[in-house]
Image (cartoon, rainbow, N blue to C red):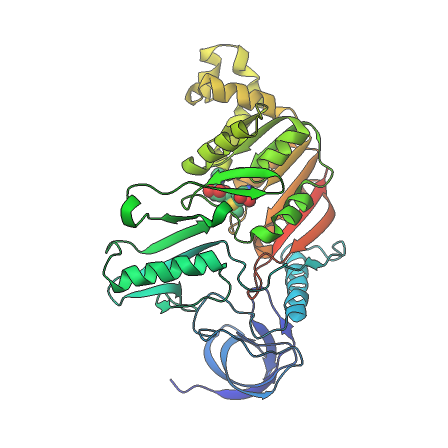
Length: 425
Ligand SMILES: C[S@@+](CC[C@H](N)C(=O)[O-])C[C@H]1O[C@@H](n2cnc3c(N)ncnc32)[C@H](O)[C@@H]1O
């Protein structure tokens, strides 16, 4: 295919991290660009009125451009913001969140906000997933836009203990000591620099090591099989932003993981329910609550959407005290008595609901369930502004008002940003 080469100026950075330019009345998206860059680009592919391009030559660099220090930059799919100085990264993230809220969420005038900078712009990742190609003997991250493994010896955003772990895995790969059937390795570092690796390797290959991670006076048990945030240095700020002044009688936490927000929430509310579908994470959350001496919180190991729908059954017929036949009629035959008790206590319009879904956001069934529950206040913690904006649109249409918005730079050197939104209704 004959590819076209043109000169463009990058106007700004879009959600997804691409630079926006225009050429011949067409929209052009350019990865790894900086606002103000004058670039010679090559059109790689076209979709509708949008051209996707790559940089051939930097004709005149943006004042925000810096030399990316990582030798894998441009090939590795991990970091896509190393070409921007740090303030430009933060500014681009404000734009990205605003753009999503406006275009996807229909929110024209969101509250003013800044992105809280990370204390460490490099060597911050305390959790990572490394792809493993056992045939080609490669270990690292997927290349940008592909499932090919980019073999990465040194990763500039890994915390030092994580880098050591990657080097240790690489040495094992060289010696043929990694399991042939493994496709990836996950690792997380916690207190006393202990690292949990999954799938486990070496002498303790039968079990994934449990570790603890202490944050802001609370201790969490976890391992590589369960979700935990990647940038522990910013977690006190994230927890403070998410909880705000919250306190009262009842709270619900959806997608609670191992209990990062659950423990501080349980200290502020009389009764709390956390919902988490990952069995290991739910069991850690229970253990973490017990270790903190908190008996006022229950963890439900279930899919959030399903759980919300069982709650609806409880509310519609008030059947829980009316015996098994009434329960069967409303679908309650699937619930055991413990779950039923949990459902009833939660159903009365909670004071606070916190949700922290994965990147895909909350499915429609979840938003509908929240709207039926009608919590007095909602906190939405999100790692994807696009799905956040989609979900906010529905919550606002359902009668909620956006009270405040905070963003945190949990992922320096990438376009990703963590956003915390408070709503009331
Ligand atoms: C972004 S993490 C947040 C976890 C926790 N709030 C934290 O900060 O450590 C999302 C969590 O939701 C869980 N999850 C994903 N889909 C779910 C679903 N449909 N129902 C319940 N939990 C789900 C994942 O296992 C993960 O623990």
